[in-house]
Image 1 (cartoon, protein in one colour):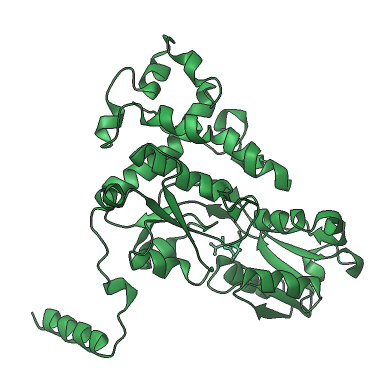
Image 2: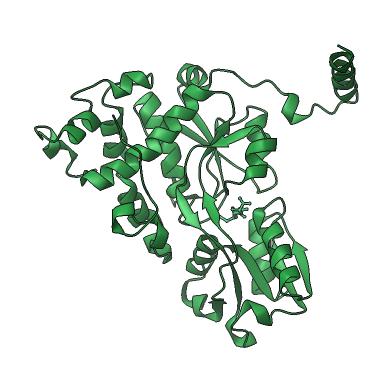
Length: 342
Ligand SMILES: N[C@@H](CCC(=O)N[C@@H](CS)C(=O)NCC(=O)O)C(=O)O
């Protein structure tokens, strides 16, 4: 009893102080209903990372993170264009989800224990298995991260990147100076202008950086050490399990489609398939869609609109030169595996 009173008093104190802590905010309890009512799914992505999220010359958002947003919008609303992208910095992204400003984070965000246990969010799957790397100027002569003693390293705040780097340098008894910059354009220009000797980020993001440098890309060298595990994926507010189920199974549907050989161009030819897995996937037998509160052909709509997981990869990751590696399907030596859709 006394504890409850104390909690209430503390809550009042915090609110009274004008610190509307994001954890106390009460976003809608039924995200799916809210998405249907507004006719749009709202996602936060990074502002300008080619391959993940970047507006094209027409202003249309492209990238694997954007495609996940489109896939979920298609499952719920039947239309991949019914999305709104709200770009965020690494430091802002979690508050935006907590406050209800967005429905979902798909922002090259790493699934960690601390984030799930303390930020009120839950990861629905792994869209990209990644790891952290270092990039240097090729003419620096540095060829290994263990040669970075005394280096200045550009890094973004509020990231796993910052934490892993501290661990790495401590473990190897190396000195370093972090240059912490929130804005992605500024971090890139700081590295290019040699304000930092090295730039550290998810390897996919470093590939994206290099791809953005065009003919100058060979001025930079990705060092061979991958110092962490960075399973990136979509995250939603904890407790809204109906929405969580949909996001999680949209991811699994993308993977399952690839496993079944179903893609955006051949999907119609499967209509008369007698394979029971295919029939269930298409919604021609069973009622998997209805169980999720969706149309029974939700998975067909998703694959028609955005393709299967392999198509997402080819469209977004292959052009930036990021090898598929662990993101291959489980039966091709990778980690992408979906539980049975039945
Ligand atoms: N995966 C790490 C790092 C996230 C991160 O820094 N992502 C980069 C790589 S895509 C990024 O979003 N940069 C663009 C930006 O911050 O605008 C995390 O979740 O903390």
